[in-house]
Length: 441
Image 1 (spheres, helix red, strand yellow):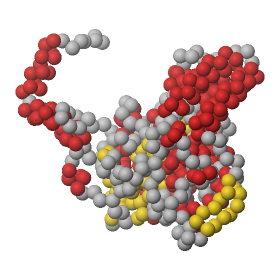
Image 2 (cartoon, rainbow, N blue to C red):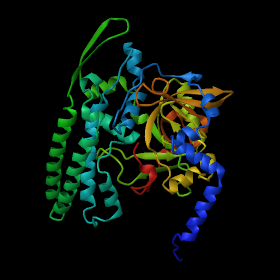
Image 3 (tube, rainbow, N blue to C red):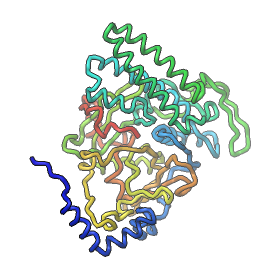
Image 4 (spheres, rainbow, N blue to C red):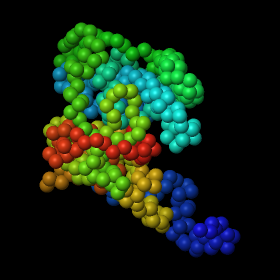
């Protein structure tokens, strides 16, 4: 097929047609002076939304991940903290996000180096290696990766390993870790050409340096801590020393009972099948990251049923689409970009996945749903962007946004239709490492 350049005549035509379009020139005047989102926002949508919902499970303040990509850890811990509130009567409580962040960075680094050893016989320009090298130790993660960390390391209260400057602002620390790991990839690949033992020795040497960097930036994880608190009754409670694993056993449900449901409507990813993604994980030896792909209504119904049973739900979505951060709202038609620009932007969810327009970018927690005559209308969402926006950090999602931009939830098995339980025992189909369903929230 012949490739064609943009000719001067064609460019003149574009310019003349734009100049003759009075509406386009008015919009140009507006958008050159203010944000496109302010111009395109549908005020009718904004004024139709309020944060009230008929089912609400949260009664706690919002957390803040600040300048980090730890949303999946915040969301995971937020979704599981209800038991602490119920037993202790605390008015404010958080598990330590920094504690799991430390172990996640360490485990991801080891996972990455092991992959570099496994793939040492491939050329460095191999697509999988190139993809892994592009982001060797991301802040992001998935529900199964969250579970793997807790099963190995447990959890602690925030005071036992509080936030640091680097846990809340990970950029500079990540640059050092990426440098170490890419250099380590070079070295383990060279060592693997000699022997497996030599490659393992190099891996351990790099991991010692990773541990040192993480300890400098994030602090050293506690082996045990004293669990004590003053409840809203003003009575002081001290339960003594706990290890992180003991604390997890005390307050968390059986995480083996949870499964991940995703909605991927591409023809290449059939519904009612189990999937995994090549080279996706953090803890070597943990159970693989797996998803059960289902129609979006299965996710909606399971989430609604869980909220009505009094439990919150970890979720992953493409948060940047049709969202106003300050107002704290999502709606499928919040911004009329097509009308403002006079162009066509319509794509199905499957097409957005296929052509790189969509992927899971953020994890949060469903904490409420508004139901009228059995139908969901909107959702209450606990974000981790602080309490200075939205409804003290809790966002409102209209149901019009749910179908197109929600991708994943973690749900107890007993919320699933009976016919899907057998699918969980099947061998998962493997997607390539770069597939959008392997994106980290």
